[in-house]
Length: 122
Image (cartoon, rainbow, N blue to C red; front, side, top):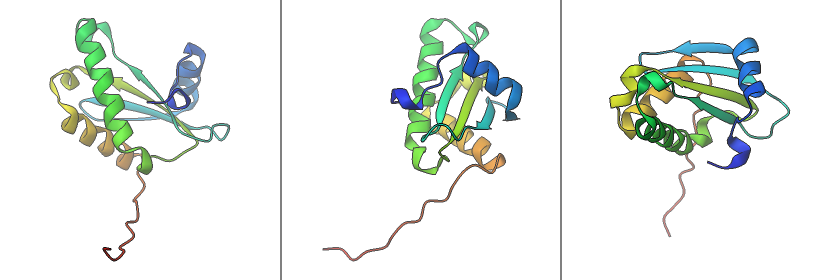
């Protein structure tokens, strides 16, 4: 995930926590907040030490970044997002995490449909 798509500073996380909205399912909690100052969306991921040791936490973060990257065309620009991982997510693979992220975005009404242009094959 490119640097322009990352939320990194604690103050940015705190701003989204305090002023943003949240929505959750069994695996993840999504905090989101409009941020018209950024041309892209930004994502922060929080994985508690309760989830597991560093290898497990880093694996979950990598999988979540990949899941978001695969859906980036359907995620609205100009938003800050924070994904907080819950314990059940530790046992999930990429596809399950991706569907969990999609579920939260749809629940928050932030998941865009991408139009497919049907052209003739050459």
